[in-house]
Image 1 (cartoon, rainbow, N blue to C red):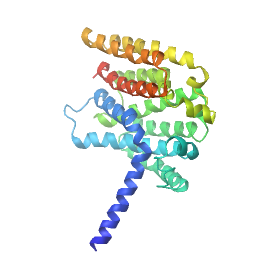
Image 2 (cartoon, rainbow, N blue to C red):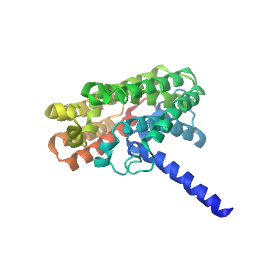
Image 3 (tube, rainbow, N blue to C red):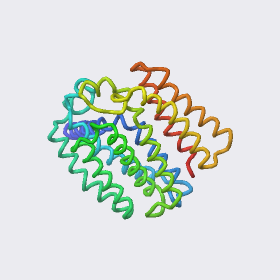
Image 4 (cartoon, one colour):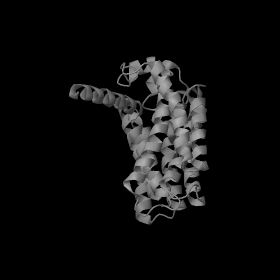
Length: 287
């Protein structure tokens, strides 16, 4: 009896690890920033959110991420064999067909879970699914403009839904809605920061990103856009002078790195610092 229980436990642990590996690369770039954004910007927030509420936020974001990442990774598993062999598909932890089954099974799960928090959360979930299909199944990720816009709007859907889950109201108030809107604008104009580190792979498969099509312009836009957004947001939310200076200085350093350091390893580091600047955006949000 005990060996059977241990065997079952190992199989369950393996399945959980497989699902986690689909989303591993998005933990620091999406799961953590969106969770903190939701807690900071929730309408009528709980003064001291219970651990269960924080867990609900994380689960809501994660299952939507999981659904999207599976959809994305089953599109071209051969590319992952070259660039990311530790992912579930190239490593043989799961077959493409089984992954696709999980991806479509998660659609009603996400919708039903979202419906528990009201119409706006359900709409955010449905919109995120529609964008996911456009981005993955219909190839929206293959073109520079549509990739940035689709990713930014998709990210915004996650922020909007998670923000409502974090609060005590079934809808966004005007301040929270404005914060989500500006977040979308920031991502739409700077999200190509994440394409620098994968430029070589994108060129190899013929993917048309802003970085592969207009590399010089892409770097200039980062060196100007990140500090400008840092300045604008600090003014918009009336952040005190010391914090504003620190926020703008960090944005200037991050943006400048993309112009000064242009190796593959430097771009990876710059992308990590860009992700941290996403977290710092929370410091100038209307919490």
